[in-house]
Image (cartoon, rainbow, N blue to C red; front, side):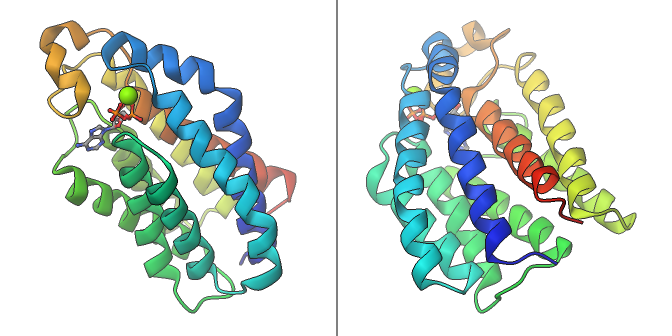
Length: 215
Ligand code: ADP
Ligand code: MG
């Protein structure tokens, strides 16, 4: 069971990972899009780092913290990533409304709810070379680990590994959603920036869980 401390630590770690990779994410987007994915996600992360101290003071509800983060992404971040990632956090927030602590199952279910939200808003599914190619496999791997009775730390490790596999998979397929779809075949061989961000997010959550010795 985790509380607000782990939620805040995870969100901070996610922000730090993404800011560290801003340039790399821009370069990935440059190859198949307009080169702004790192900039967009770093903007979301800076917004989050500014918001968190205030949320620590005022919010006990896990759902509300995630909701505020989602609203921030939508209102402050451009591109398609702002609304898509914002929706991910809003759906996760909806799932956790009223909870002051989260069980490992709550983490897995909120992650899955977020992934469904992204695919609904993006009218996209797996195999289209988007963040969904990391989100859905990670959700499945985390669910399996949960059902096998693993700890949250192990669940996140399994999710990060599956997301890495998803990122690799995006190199082998052609984009049919988002800007990368405009270049069709030429998107082959390139790794999807959004999927890469998802991998970083889960890696960051895993690091936070290891650092805090979360079961
Ligand atoms: P933009 O494409 O507007 O420049 P970003 O560069 O920040 O926005 O984000 C691009 C990423 O968004 C892609 O790498 C992809 O993972 C994700 N993406 C784009 N369109 C969709 C969609 N319809 N469904 C899911 N993810 C999408
Ligand atoms: Mg872009």
